[in-house]
Image (cartoon, rainbow, N blue to C red; front, side):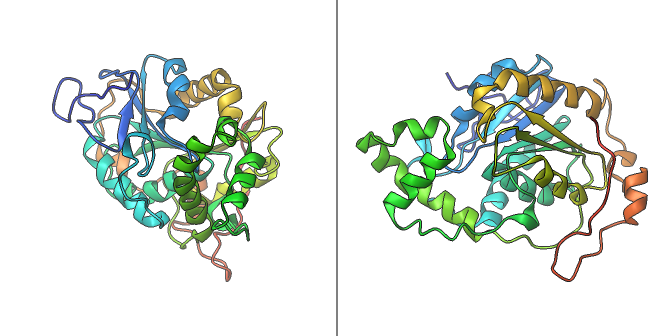
Length: 305
């Protein structure tokens, strides 16, 4: 059953009632909050199992996009930056503790664009952006598919796989899901990266070993989007490894957050929100210069093995 944490200023801080945010396992005293952004056509249910697998010092809160499940009647949003802006307004009051973002597939782009809005004034700042199964922003390209055609949408969902593909032949469910799926796929197709300064938080990419849409090589292209640490990880499974091996994902997240999040009881100081001073930031000399094609410059960074 879905439940919600208390409002900021209440016991343990956290989020009050919100149509956007869901917390499966409330942990008001958790040291870190992990905000999760679903894939195209996905919902908060994508993270239900993961919420029970992350360690007890992590509270998982998932974002419920408009036009699905209990928000079916809410108008869909067809522009990525507008969607990020709406989520930003919901999240901003609840940054009462170190927070990380995890976005899967389309959700990685939504999380990135939301992080760009939070970075200049979030206190405490993000401790990490986990980008799962999604190419770097400047590498996102239109599919060239006509998503106005219901059968093209159905075929594309089948190609992607995952639990959503199981409902393709249930016409009643399909009729309900089609508007959401079409909107999300068109939203992704229309997205174009707008050059800007990199994030200050670490970026951790996660790919499925059998995912041909997001390979280990693709993951490296996320590196220039941060002045902090960069890590690339691979887990068994395909594009929806998150459904196949949630326990492995939970272990990876726990290990990364243990290394990246500030210690329990840490109080935010001006130094926490100042420009990074690590070697990676110095190598950039501040915000990255843009190449003529608008992409961030390539940057080689050592990463964990």
